[in-house]
Image (cartoon, rainbow, N blue to C red; front, top):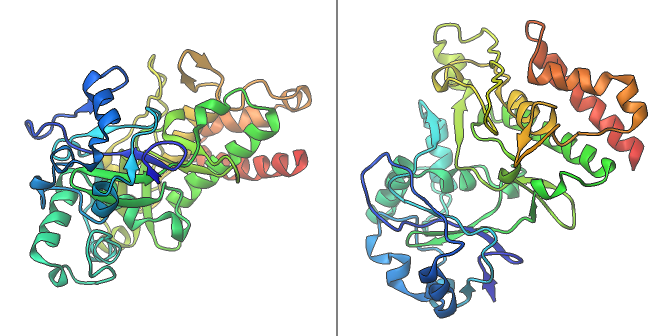
Length: 355
């Protein structure tokens, strides 16, 4: 039997209200009697609960057979998230190129003609469904266009029914490893820096910038220990090949993100306009170092980051702290680029040494 929360599947996305466009609605359901009743009755098999009547203004129908046959049930509250289909747009496609649009269409899972390169080959309802998802809540399209099966560090998209989306359950949130043994934390930190590098520089020349980085947006596989992004709600996708072709002003000037020493958790400073117009950007390194790894990282009342309290010999050496500081808040021009490279290498060395 399929489940939408641990241990089988992960997150749910759906609409509860169709309110004014532009407002964000995230429903917290931990103490909702109506959701408890829904859990007991398994309303995931109810067409009205799934809002199938709203299609094609919905995420899709590829998983409706599993939903309607009762194969998908609520098992626990763990990773349940409800989003408004029309009111959530935190994923941005910077000047969508034809190459990026082709990728979206070719990997669109909510069509029987999956693999088609042409939008016009889709049925009218499928085309409208895709365009509405792209316009109002593109997060499922990120998961489909940059799939885990091809090595991208995102949770696997499974399917949709109406305004519900099923994404595979990865494991416990990164936060649960905050006080894990040093060896484990070193390995996780190395993986996080590798993710930052992959999303910034890859053979496909698409940059995916993470605009919301916190310990709750990543999870760790219980068997392979692999770090995966489980919340792709805040992502900016830029076609670096298009940037090089169009050559906007200062396109070839390396962009250094500004350190944000704010008094809130998981702060990030960025300009979407600049991220969309520069070919070389250090944003992902900055986001991971500042919000997850360095002494500047704060979350749920803690500080010190994932690499807090290193062994005495590493603390005495001082190299790790220096690299983390330069990666989060560089003192040299373009210092973060070099610090991120050296940090990845150093963490790989430490990870190999502790295995």
